[in-house]
Image (cartoon, rainbow over all chains, first blue to last red; front, side, top):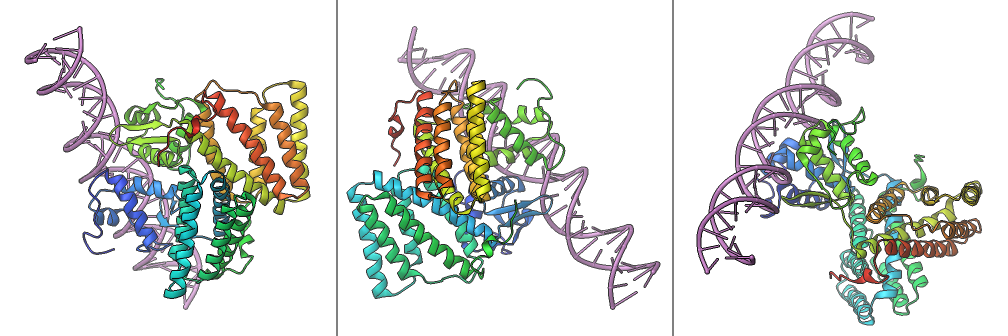
Length: 232
Length: 232
DNA sequence: GGTCTGTCAACTGTCAACAGTTTGCCGGAT
DNA sequence: ATCCGGCAAACTGTTGACAGTTGACAGACC
């Protein structure tokens, strides 16, 4: 953060837009961690721009749920309480259950065969290589959402996934649920290929419930601290 | 738009935040209609502020999907194509189906009794007064979302509802589906009280599918123009 | 008459400076 | 030693001015 020129801005578009994507990457990369404050003057000068465009980028990122703005105090990389993470997983579940229904109705057999192949290949690669299959897990969900054929839904779901990813970055990562997740993916694909929307939705929910519990546990929240701080 | 002082800004908070809510209301009120451009200098001077805070508010409203920003051309109140409206109804359906499931699991009997009473009262008021029950329809969905007990989901769903409301403002309004909608609400409540999540979700989807068709028809889109402009 | 080109006004993108608020520090009183 | 009040530095909120881009209009040319 202190080295003069820092990361460089891409070449086209307005400063505001370029800065938005750049800062988003810095947040999701972990270059700036949850709780950190964004010092407008130093960050702006590090990027070689003035505070105006930076502030506009900050407003948008706050709208995406990646930053929290406190009046007269500044913009902070968002931190998450147990309850908020729980709510984010609800959102994700809502999106993907419905996406699964849409896939059942709209996807071609070829699409589903490709998804099936993807899961199989991942399984093979994992049983031989043995590495952490988290990126493949994310890919599966990205593919599922894309097959639903709803760009708005896809964007919203990815935004929620980004928030979850940020929340998970608060812990020392990698709960290694890889094998179980893969089996659950296979269940989902099977239901999709059988064109039974209810089953697919059910398996999606089951899968995400497991992921939710795993994430909350990795973050050190006991299983029902998520209902702790009632706001209403 | 041309009367000097225009609508006044509320008293507390930053100009940026106040302007955001004020402009949002202007958009949803129809004070500025879909397709209209926001002239930064004239709007800022009408609000008695400078362009900086206004631009920040514009960024946030664009993130909410109420404005579309085009580089070097300005911010326009968003317009919607048939496909986008269809996608928004998908979003809404995803939210409310899952909300219904959550209500089945979490709401107290008293909560559901109150919701039931609300529907009955609306029905009576409508059979006597006979007026358009659209505000009551909205209230029902707002209550349902609130009972789900997930603030994040509630906010996102209301944001989508606002976009749909804006989209519908492009037509000369009021398809008067009031009576049928009310019956469908009653079906949903019955399923909730029976604590059968699958049925509740099913009725929610059915209800929103009807609302979707009604909205698309009111906007003059033939029933499947919504799949018209493939982007992918 | 129609089309193309050059010029100009309007507006957005960006910047640098000013003003008000918050926060941390320092000194003094208890 | 601790707590309180006030001062000063740092930072955010806001402003007004400058620069680059866009779209339209007017005039020349085919």
